[in-house]
Every structure is written in C-alpha cells, then in structure tokens.
Image 1: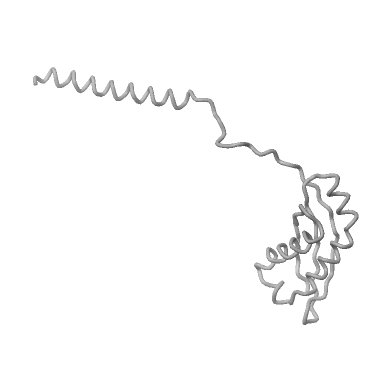
Image 2: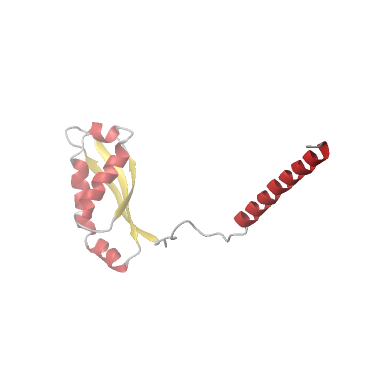
Length: 139
C-alpha cells in the first residue's frame, strides 16, 4: 500500500471510532432518569417520651438512670394503644432493666443490646413499636 492510502485508512478508522463514541454518549445521556426501583413512601413518626427511669441493677448497689423514648409510625390507633398501656410498657422496661447487672450495662456495646431487649419486651405488649432509647449510666 502506498503511504497516501495508509493515511486515508487511518483517518477513516479514527473517524469511525469518534462517530461510535459520539453515538454511544448520545444514547447514554439522552435517556431520561429512572430510579432503580420503587420509591417507598416514608411514614412520619411520632414519639412518646416515657421520661427518666432510675432502676436498681441486679446483684450490686449500682443503679441505671436512663431516658426512654418510644418512636412509632404515625397511627391514631397505635397512639391511643400506647397511651392506654403506657404503665404496662413502663413496667416491662423497668423489669427488663432490673434483671441486668452492672457489667452487662457498662460495656460500650451495651446500648444496642439494651435497645434490643426493650424492643422484645415491649412488642410482647404492643405490636409495631420501635425504640429510640437514650442511655446514660450513672453509678
């Protein structure tokens, strides 16, 4: 092949590569944005402040001071049920916390475990309840 034919062939290959790049970019950017799944509607939450609880811990002279807030999805029935059974839920929380020892609540990982225990105890009384607890240990 002559040098002139090689140059023309190189120019044609480069132009074809550029045309393919432009076509790919156009088809990629011209598609409308579509989310990758169904968008879930978020339900606003309400909360019930159970107040500050002071509980003697099991097997020692230490006590636990904690503030418990129950967070739940906005629902008139559930709000009425929580108000009606507020004392029963508070009693379940106190009973669960009194069964814990100082070593069980003083560890750094204990807040998550306490929330889990409180959630299990309260769901025995109420359904569809989530806990958002704020724990501070005072001895």
